[in-house]
Length: 353
Image (cartoon, rainbow, N blue to C red; front, side, top):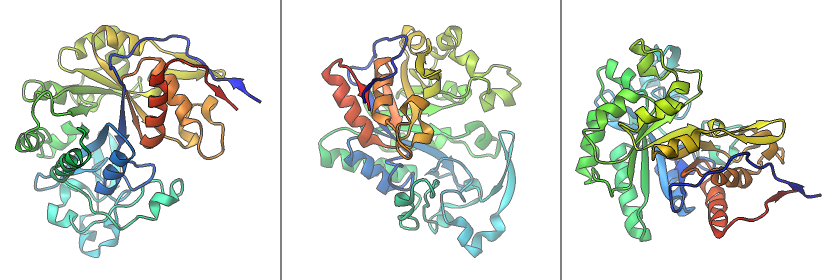
């Protein structure tokens, strides 16, 4: 039996000629995240850009990790010589126990090997546990340059600074080494295919006069406050930033927004209802990337959970493209690349069985 796919209630046009497919932490649906292997796999699968998060070691080297605490994505707990570095810290109001990148030197990080964060959900990726090191930002930029030359196409890098205000409070700037790394690689210019993102407006405002690459303001759950604003006593939430007035303010220091996909469209009784966010952002000439698209049914809206394990990621990506987004950030770049390429052929009736 064939049924009509849920359709958006509002549509707009993308600012991008071809919306970008961005590999979230590499091809992290298939290999442990934030490894050179995951990034290379994403590029081989056709991703236009790779996305990586940056944290700092104790000696000020930028690492590709999603958060400062390392035990979820590395084998740090298996190293007895590092046992004394296990500690508890308050990170943006959340008490966390483990091993933190800012307590380890680069030499100590070199001993670690990456692990799959979602081992039960992604056993194929978990089979690669222990095989790959934790790369530095410098190493990722070198690899991307090599892959771009080898493949004859320019591969983009979307960089997210993780908790820059918290890191600065520990005495470790993320801004200074970021600027230094980009300049050392000759990438601080508008054609470099590098974009810098963060949830914290103050870091982007600090970067705006320093860098010539595009900046993106990330938007989280609407009832939450950016950590830097909360620390400063600023009452604004992400809902305030996502409002027309907030977007007009973002346009003063950034070139785009990166929004949770649920901020663009949501399931209401089996019908996907679009918000005004894409339209409002485009009115300020802000590009819109959405995150994070995953193939596993648990991460998709109910109308796209048509199988027990993997749902209809291609269908959901197509709907978001219908809504005019400028980029799709995904753990499964091959699926989204195929959906994007099919969408570019032209409008058609999409169905689900």
